[in-house]
Length: 155
Image 1 (cartoon, rainbow, N blue to C red):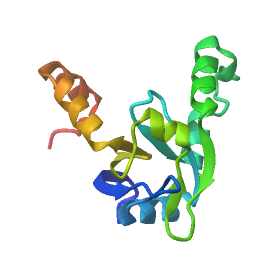
Image 2: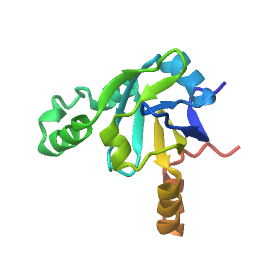
Image 3: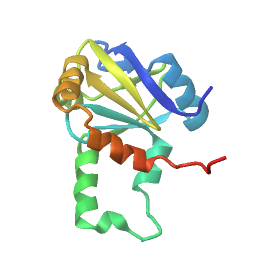
Image 4: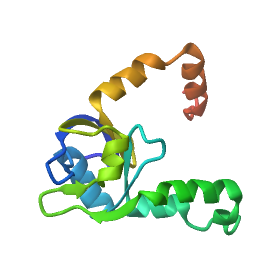
């Protein structure tokens, strides 16, 4: 089993606002990161679910010091923590998404759960499809992405 969260699966939000994490994602999260999660939103169109250790490594003190005191970082931290919350996967692999986050991201019934290497995004399927259609990948996007891919030595 790979130690990354990749792919896309359909899931349901139950009447209590919990989502059952798809099994392939749940296995990786529990085995690699543990059950502690941070649930938030960066842009209101989707929900981000980070293993807590990933979230803490992204937002902890860095070699540069207390970056959370920078105005831009502070604004980011205020936004993600305003409606973000710490949760634990329950025994059935479910995690609660607050009503405020569900409403902002228009999550009801069936949702799409996407793996983005070290965290998950939860989307309303129609919103996701609209976003992908509205903002398709361009040749410039592919060129930028290609520059990020490490090149091996020629043989």
